[in-house]
Image 1 (tube, rainbow, N blue to C red):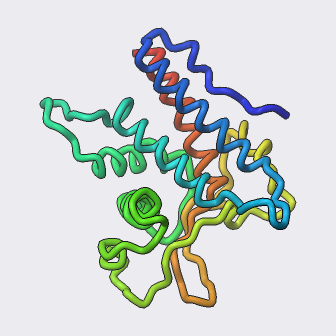
Image 2: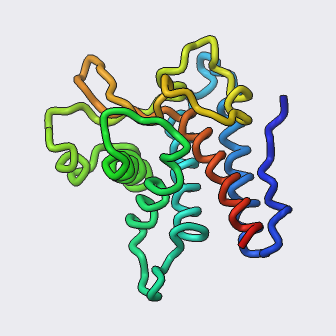
Amino acid sequence: MPYRHLPYETISNPEFRKVFHHADMLFHDVYGMFKRPEVDGGGGGCNFSIALVLLCVIDGFGSEVYPTRVDSHGKPIKPGDRFKGFVRDKLLPQATWRDTDPNKAAEDLYKQFRNPLVHALAGDEPDAKKERGNLAEAEPVIGKWGLIHEDNWDIDLFDTVDEWSARWPLLFRHESEDGSCMKLCCAALYCALKRTAMDLIKECRES
């Protein structure tokens, strides 16, 4: 089954059409990373790369589509607030997550995942440690499939899915040898973000 492209050509506004065209190329790259077979000695699993690309798409949607760069009074919206506003209001309604409320989930995606990947080579940042409130807690981790059963490890199943199972959360508590930590599921993030993009395209067509 081939990758399902975003219907960005149906948007009449050229600026929005360009935004979603670029987003579609990034989604297509992520799809390809999921499809890539993991061969011993042939490279990594692409978990960090997938998460980084998808978090960058969130950044882009947050600045170019919703909430945009300025508020209703023309005042600049800080990048972090744009990111978290998009996650809280647009992304999370498309996903399931555990052990946290929407505001905390948006904060976690920004401080525990987005910032370390963008600025610190996925290393733990001091602010992120403080935000967790427990310096002994293990660093957050990123998994390609999270709690999805191995029988369903096929990105084609999630490229067109309309409803996400509550058994497959985007964010959840994970127990490892290093202790309890927050874990991000890349497949859930891909699915929720792509469905959000489809909704945004519909909004752009109707505006």
